[in-house]
Length: 162
Image (cartoon, rainbow, N blue to C red; front, side):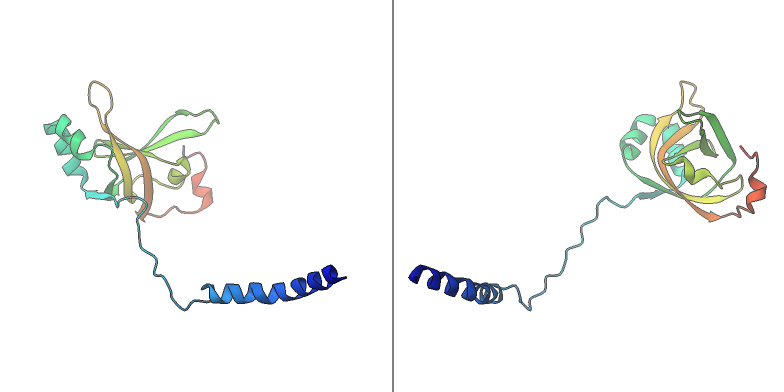
């Protein structure tokens, strides 16, 4: 009989005791912590296309040390040509942007869907070095593309563009 009375007392007192415990241990503190800003990645290094090209032409080894493995921001790049390579495994054409002796390979092919010659772009990417032994053009890979200037027109203008 004593056992069941003490059990009832403990069960009825327990919610009040737990509530008091939460209040007294700081769950209702007025102190606010300010979050600390920590960038996930370093911002890209702002460069000009002419600067990178001249550095690679004059001394490729030093240019690889300077630019290799870094994200670079190329501003106001005018699209001279859209280059379409062979289809990938899903029968989607691989589209690259060519400007001033540099070929930009977008990270996502959908980024180039509505880009035409004459568009002006801001591009963030990583220099991959010269293409081929003849050094025909410099390759920038993993590019994020932002259209600065250019009109995509209407959907009917896009039939058979590629």
